Image: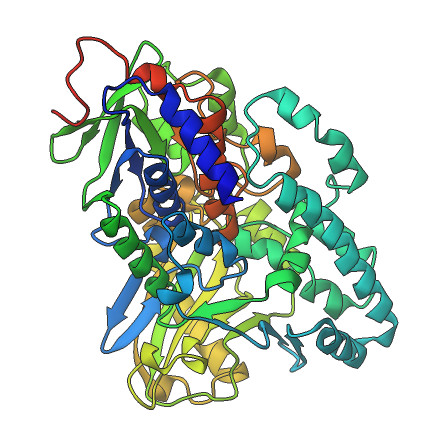
Length: 528
C-alpha cells in the first residue's frame, strides 16, 4: 500500500513547476476530514495551512470540558482504526505510540421501552445467542445478512470508498455491481428480507441513523457497516475522540502543517475558472495553489462562491437534495455512577417507522423520541471526577427546514429526555445531576455552517451517492476540492477519513495544481 503511495508521490513531484518543487494548499475545516487531508497533502510534499472558525481542532469531534467532566462533542465510535493508523504511517510512526484504542464489548446495547434489551457485539456466536432470545428462527437469516453485508463491503468500501466519482462514466462502470447488490433497496428492506422478528429488524437497521439517514430510505450500500464492524470491531480511544484529535494535532505540528484557528472564511475569489484566494473575517486574504473544503458543500456553493461560478447541476443539488436530520445533543454529569449502563446504549421508543417519518419527511418535532446514550466512563474513568459519570445523549430531530423554534422548546425537550432516561435507564437521575447543556440544529448551523443545521450534510440516499453526491473536485473550478460528510463517500468517521484518500487519488490522477503553480506575475501564495 505505502510503496504505491511513494510512487504516486514521486509522480506528483515530477509534475510540479515551482523551482523548489513545492505547492501550497489551504484546507478549510479542521474536522477529521480536514485533518486527514492536511496530513495526506503534507505527505505528498505540499506546504499546508489548515483553517477553522472554531478556536480548537476537531470540528464536530471537538471537546467540551465543564466542572471536571470531559465530553466528546460529536462522534464517539471508532470502527475502522486502520484509517487513523495510515495517517501516522505516512510519516513512519505508529498510531499505538500516540493513541490507546480499546475494543468494546458489547459494541452497543439496544434497549426498548418495554424493557427488552439486546447486547450487540463480540463474536458472531455472541450475537446469535442474543438473537435466539428473541427469535431462534432468525439465527440463520442473520448469518446470511452478514454474508450479504460482506459482499456489499467488498464493493462499497474496499473498491469504491477511495475511488473518485468525477464523471458520469465513473458511475456507469459500477452500475452492474450496484444493481447486483440491490443497492436501490433501503437498508430496512434489505434487513427485512433476512430477518422476520420486528425487534431484530429494528436492531439490525439502525446503522443509517449513525450517518444521518433514515433506514427506510437509505441505500442498502450502508448495510456494509454490519461487516465493517465484524471485521475490525468497535473501539474507544482512551481520553475520548478528543485524544485522537490531540494526537493528530501534534502530528501536524511535527510535520510543519500550519494551523490557523478562530478564523471564518467569508468568500472565495474565483478568476478564470480557478480559486485565486480566500477572504477571512479578519480582513486578510490567503492565496494557495489548491483549496480543499472540509465544509458543507451546499453552504460553500450557496454562500462562499461568487454568483455564476457554480454549475447548474450543483445549484440543482442544493435546491433538490434531501438533507440529513438535525441533532439534539445533551451533555450532563452525575454525582453517582450507573455501572449497569453500557458504554453505548441505543434506547428505542414505542414508535419506529412513524417517528422516522416525522423527523425526515414531515419535519415535525414529535412528543416521543429514540435516543443514543454514550457513557464513556464505563471504559474510561478519566472522563469524569472520581465517583461520577459523564453522559452524552443524542436525539434525532428535524433539521431547520421544519421551522422548530429551539429557543422556545429546547429546555422542554431536554427535560423530557431527562425524565425518560430516569424512568427507563438512570434511576434518580435528576437528583444526581451536576449540570446539563445541549446543542440543537441551530448550533450546527451557526458553529459548523451546515445548511439547514443538518447533522450530516445531505442524506445517504441512492440518488445522493457516488456521482450524485457533491463531487470531490469541482467540475468547473480546477483547483477547488471537497472532503467531508457532504461529498463522496459520505458521512461518519470512516467516510470522512476516506474522502481524504479520494482527494489524494484525484490529485495523483489529475494534478491540475501543477499548472496552477506555474502562473506568471503572481505574488507567492499567502503573500497578502
